[in-house]
Image (cartoon, rainbow, N blue to C red):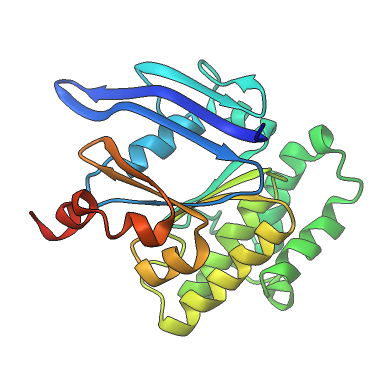
Length: 240
C-alpha cells in the first residue's frame, strides 16, 4: 500500500460557463517529485489554487495527509503542511529578508514547535544562499535571489508538500540549474514537491512522474519520458 500524502478526486471548477477543471483525479505519494505541465490556459494554476484553498472547487474532494480539505481556507491548509511559491514573488518590500522569512515562521512556529525562530530564519536563508544578505530588502535582490527568497518563505511554514509554481521562469541556464539543485535538496530532506514549469529539460530532470493538463482535463499521468511522447501530449503542445 502506497503512502499517499495528497489525493484529489473528481475535482471540478467553473467560471460561469467556462469549465476550468473537469473531473481531475490526482494522487501524490509522500516524498514524490511530480511535474505538472500543460499549455497556457490548460488549468494548472486553477488546479493548484483549488488544492491550496485560494479557490474553492465546485465538485470533488481533496485530502491531505488524512485531512479532508474541502471548506478549509488557504491559511488553514498551510498550517496542515501545504505550501507554495508563486511565479511572481510576493515579498514584503518594506521588510528585510530576515523579517520576510520570520513572518511565516512566527505564524506556524507554535504549531510546529520551532524553538528558536531567528535561528530557523538563518538556517533557511543559508539554505538558499542568502544568509549574507539577511539585512537587505527585496528590492536589492537579483531575479534569481528573489526566487530563492520566495522558496525560503515557502519553506518557513515547515511544509510536507511544496508546490513550486514556475520558480525558474525567466532565469538563465545556470540559474535554472541552481533552482533545480535547491529543489532536489529539499526533496532529499523529505519534502514532497509538485513542480509546475514550462522549461522541459528541468521538468524531465526533476520529475519522477509527469501529469499533463489541457483544456482543464488530465490527458496523461506517468513516466515523464513516456508521457512526453504520447500523441495527445504532442498535439496539445504542437497541434494535431
